[in-house]
Length: 202
Image (cartoon, rainbow, N blue to C red; front, side):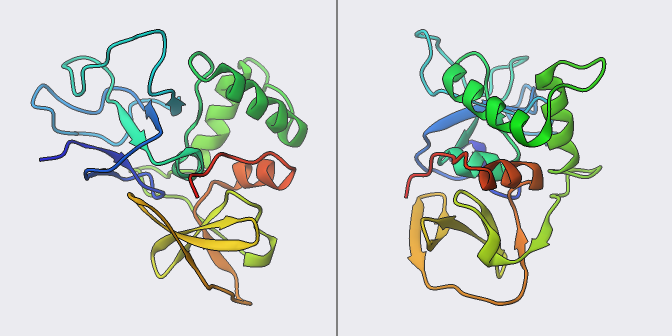
């Protein structure tokens, strides 16, 4: 039976067997039984490299953070995760530079990562872990953004639309003049709109 450690665009953690290109964490979410008992422990939601400095990772180890997995970077951003400053240093620095151009630098009394995490957290979940979404015209969404089509995530990418699953993408025809429900957090979409683009396995 697959472990409950694959993350979708609603930030939900599912038990499915699928390939992933990134891992990440939100703290210790599981108990000694390997069952998840919370959706997150802290606001520092990051994505990490699958391999880094030959570190060995025991999944669902007691007292260790819960390893989460993502199909790609665009998926991780939609779920509310940002690049890790250690194992994804180059990507982190690139994203942070783009973030600062759009949103400014650190808040008083907080480091820049703390500032980013606080803003992201307010735009990804409400109390209880429910996903934060917003409405926007489809035509104005930048590459790398996900929106919901009948509850299913769809990626905007290079002028096309791709329906997402844990296994990958399938191109679809989708045009609408009415606003759509955007799944990627608004502050991240604003960074994408300024020219920074996430990786997507399309």
